[in-house]
Every structure is written in structure tokens, then in C-alpha cells.
Length: 100
Image (cartoon, rainbow, N blue to C red; front, side, top):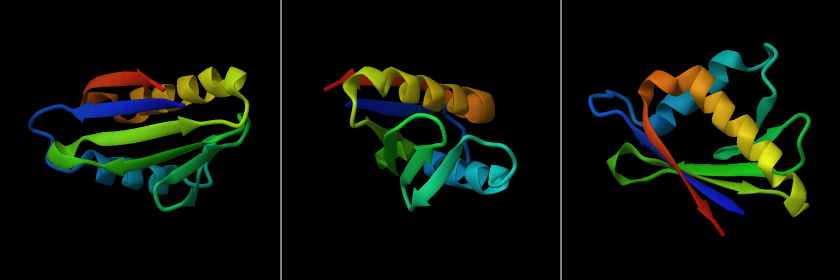
């Protein structure tokens, strides 16, 4: 399991959790590879596993990358970081990865 901590840029008016939910809603059904399984849990069309995420104090977002097969975890991690960079990169100050 990998845990991501996403720190939004200072001056961002909305919580990062809200920005992520709004972007997913905006892209839904139009070619995005991530889809909402339920509130705070996403899956990827091609890579097995799931991403559980929630907001934290200070507008942070904490996400857990979980897969059944440890050797495929990097693919889901790479896809999620790419998604964040492409769609919300202008709102991100930093991303930290914790290895568990």
C-alpha cells in the first residue's frame, strides 16, 4: 500500500477534496480511465485495485493506493499521479508518497 499526501497551493479557495470531486463529475463518461465506485473510492478501468481518499485538516487530501497484487501497485500509483497532474496540477503545492 502507498499513501499519498497532496498539499494544495496556498490561496486555493476550495478544499482539494472538493476540486477532485468536481473534476471527476465534470469528466464522468467522457473517456476518463478513473471512475467513482462510491464516495471517496475510485477504480481504474485497466489497472486492478482501488484508491481510497479523503480530505484532512488544512485542505490536504490523503489517498491510499491498494491493489491485490503488490507488483501492479506502481501502475495504479502512476495513473493517479498523472491524473492529478493533468487535471489539478495548478492547485498542487506538493505530493508526498509514504511506503507501507
